[in-house]
Length: 456
Image (cartoon, rainbow, N blue to C red; front, top):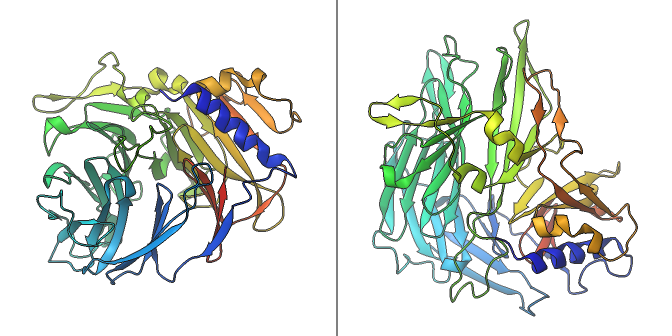
């Protein structure tokens, strides 16, 4: 569980943003982004590199609350990088090799501090076979001893280019592959995030535009257990609200920040426990009318990760010989969520999740200028709203289970009820930003090639 007192203090800290005299800690500052098309931000560390090159530059942000100074360093990995991710708490950088050997994808585990193979990795180079000798991009997630990579590919089938993504999960210290999920002609591995050290959540999307598609194959959120083997079937399948026959999921996106185990690199307990975090599921829907596909407003589901881990009464279905999957209809898990129709630009950082908090931009009508809104799902902060110091009421908004929780959308065939409560805090002043990001200590505003670091 998250710390109650700290949760309340974080809400109070953020509420100070609306005061003219208490905007952010005076040590807030800006830095220029390097030139390069690869970058990551995690654990207060910003990293940047260039595709096809082996150099990475890191910048550890200043933390005002603990008096940590900014630190900058650079490493040479000796590997032409296609993409990367990192975990500063484990001194780990995960590299996808730019060079391909046929359909093989090589992944390397190196040290963030030296650039050399990580001393704890028994097999610092692992590989996975994909469908095509080239791939478009990849999505990398790190969760303590686990590394998951979604390779986004395309294949040519019946004169159509179809997505053919493949997901691989490894125990990076041993090099063992724990899970491999390829796409099918009807179903694409679209997105993923770790739920715990034993479970991963995978979003499957239907290839709606393929002629002769099996419409019985529905979009879903599947939970896999690593103990079941590399080719395991899902242990649970969470179904979305029932949709019209002409409706389909165009895009799926899952986001949930990893929570490191406290160690010498992570000396203080994190804001949330590994199984009690907010998971963001963003869904873009389409409806086919008279042969034309109409894109609907995107919707965002917010819920605790433990919703996917709890036990549900088995309702069915055998997906393979000797392997059963518990089907969880929307009626059993929908009331543990909060659905919003926040209409943000198509950017992974437009709605950012950290622990139990969600941060997003609020339009002011002025181009590139936004207010910042923090939504805190910490139950202690929510239940203690009356104990917060007196501020103008427009600053705070407690969104309870009865507010904005019922939706009658024409694309669904059932009413959607999502009552998860939260505390909403919005700044009075606006900030110039293209994107907004969040970690435990800071808010990051991205504009052009500059990042402003705002410390709590």
